[in-house]
Image (cartoon, rainbow, N blue to C red; front, side, top):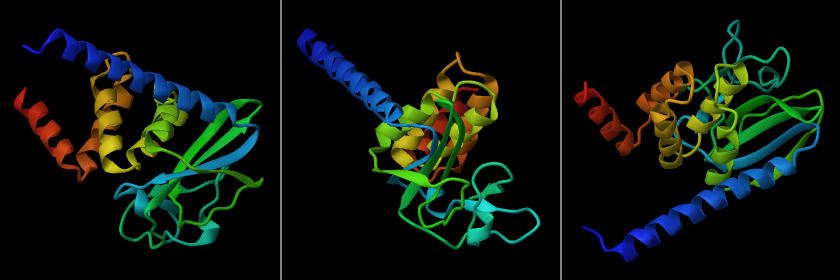
Amino acid sequence: MPAAGTVLRALLLAALFIARSVGNASELAAELSDGWHSWDVPAGIHGKRACCSDVRRKPVGAELCRLGPGAGGLMTDEDCLPTSDSLRVYILVVDGDVTDIHALSSACPVTTSTPVQSLGARDSEESIAWLDRYARDGSKLADEAVTSIALHEETRAFTALAAMVEDQGRGMDIREQALFWIAQSENEAAFDYLDRLLSAR
């Protein structure tokens, strides 16, 4: 059994981590005025090749990456030629509310109705903590938030997605989507997690 001092130190470190994550998320949210904003984080394997698509045409191409009304779907397969080690998260704020979320390879060019204000590079924890606030129900915005989290670098993304799966306070559709993305991960911890889930049945 661990000593009381060891347990106390672990609890204090956990509290500091939670406080830092919440503080960073609040700081990022405070910076968002109306309009499009973006920030960059390290990309996971799927995030490196995430780009826009149009079901009527092949993916790839600047004209297909329209954000906002009329935007195409999200492609994360090998046909998406623009690749980058960084993921760019796009947020649209209207009247103080977030109305759209997208995450694409930073190499994927986009067009928007208004200029995109860059918030620069951000820490993965900060970005995921901010997005996680919107991954709470079955709305389109929640789906986009979960997908955006999944496209972050594998280790941080897996940790966040596993927490969603185990959070019974979230909608089943969100938990199922999180589990879907865990199954797509190439992270070894994700494989182990799926093995444990299957073994428990």
